[in-house]
Length: 414
Figure 1 (cartoon, rainbow, N blue to C red):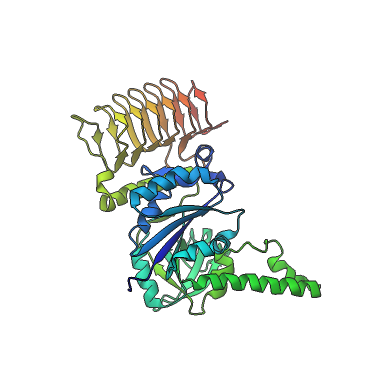
Figure 2 (tube, one colour):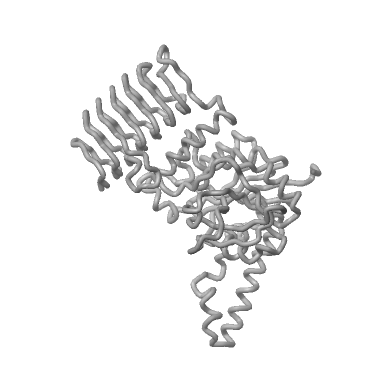
């Protein structure tokens, strides 16, 4: 690889209209900044980008207000010693349309390759290996793929790849009948020719619009009628038409992959990232045997500012944020505890997310059955919820600023 070859990375972070399934947690914080394993969601793909050789720039593209990302972007740029910049779209343009809208800025470093990542996927992001494979294939783009169960495949983009060359032969977004158990992970690397391909979509649409003016032919209209002219989707508008044309290739990951659509899934992904820290950032994982510090079992993250009583038992899969106070005899497992929470003596928390500034009373139980896909399989307390002494909360979602003085189960408390 020549030293002059530069790489840039673009991470799609979406916008406030996108995080609705993430309520009540997205009331307080843009979903991409919600902490998984103690680090903002978007931090995991960003730190993976740091491992790409000759990386010149990371761009976050979305339609949140710039002020919501300003603090994070400046701190992560300083931490990684790498320019990270937030680019605000004027309106939703689709993943390919958003990339194209900022093409001049993205091409400013004259990169030979452009990574495109979705912020709401959780995986090990094997980016350097993917780039090497992409160069071997010699195509315009390479997408990360994974094998999943046949039952769950149709929730995603299904694809068929050549078993020998790994060329993408066929691509269908959320098909109605089974196509394949290989799915699209939402992580790509492209050459700058991707911009020409997106340009071709725009030109094709102009052609159809001109035809439409000359013709009443209904079938021409149905294909593009409901899509704004400048909205270009990577999957339907680029991947599907270019499959089988020796332009797109696949790179299969054998590691974990999940999509972070709901708070319950964020708990599962926090667990996956904590487990990955064993290999990538063991210094972030807590340890303790109950003498001077709490007993820790499994993978646990504890923010340096948190105060945890030595008699507490923590883990596995626990993430404790800034300024949290954990009292004597507390038992925590499978949970995310957000900033400024107080957990009093002998409280018990499992399969739950405890919102900012909440407080859990003595001997209270906040728990769920832990089915990540069920609507109430994870208990979620919004910001500043008070659970009084000895109250049990099971399989519930509680909106901000509520006080619970009686036990509740299987309820959404508005």
